[in-house]
Length: 76
Image (cartoon, rainbow, N blue to C red):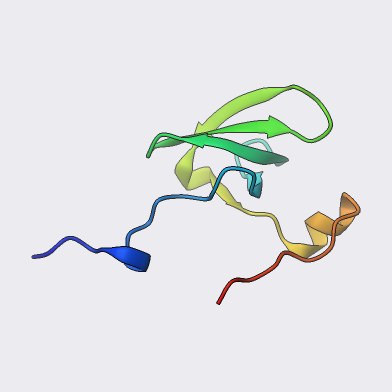
């Protein structure tokens, strides 16, 4: 079996992505990903924490609105 390449190879959310940590219920900005865990930074403060990759998802447009942000752009 061959390894996936290109777009099929998941490398995690990019640095700077606004994400939800489902273990804490907090929104954070992705700063690092080591393949297993993300390092996230709090919104508007210097608080940082790590969380398992399986607990992270992109913030919804509704969650973004609570911060005064517009909907996220989608790349095609």
